[in-house]
Image (tube, rainbow, N blue to C red; front, side, top):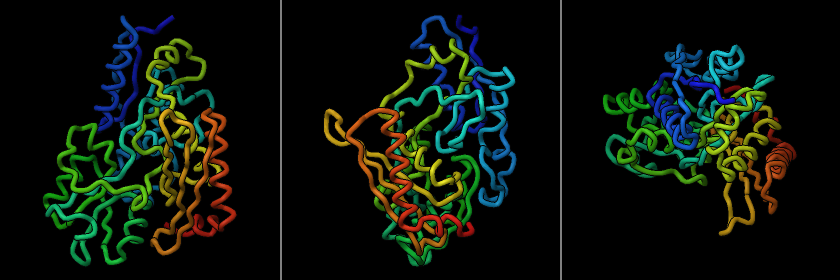
Length: 313
């Protein structure tokens, strides 16, 4: 029996609300007669905007309050940016749906319209991500990386007001807010390997809530589930959270798809040490994706990734 209405827990940032409204509209479109209402919540990460994320530490900074609402029966589903969702979910909760993934790449927005390679010597780039900062330092050691927190609109305003020369953000969020024209340059995964799960939404629900799970089933995208599974398996095996400089990118080869390839990177915060790995699977199942991530992680560990993972952020 379907609940009426379904309560969707969401953060209150413009991007989170845009993503959650899209999920609600899709659920209502795909389940005629269903109503979905948003319940806006504030997470620990939202409350601590002044501090750099590495200093706050811990997992689930942007998810715990939403998960508590699910476990306490105050909401039926929660919508997350998948890269914010820890790889170990609380008992009783499941990753119920992964809709079709957006662009996984990072994007550069520069004040003067300069590409990354053309930014002046010592240019100041804003980012809240250790992963982005480390890879930017690897590409251009002269860059000055400045901590940058806040919603997307806040970050764009800080760029316009100076003294930053550029900022780096996930392309997916910019697209979802309809601001793609502001992007100066898309950074290929070979330059900036994305975060685990970047560009994907993760919809969480209670494992035994069959009505909600059934209502979410039509939103599931199989390729997106496979890529998310492989990347999250890698991260789980490495024991990293969102603030460890681990990056991954899943590519699907050939049409129709006959194989998936996972490339992964572990890099020191200073961008001076890094290890790469690449694995492929010709089997397109969730179990094979889980195995792909684990194999890629084992390759990284054999090459000495643990010594990099233990470096201070």
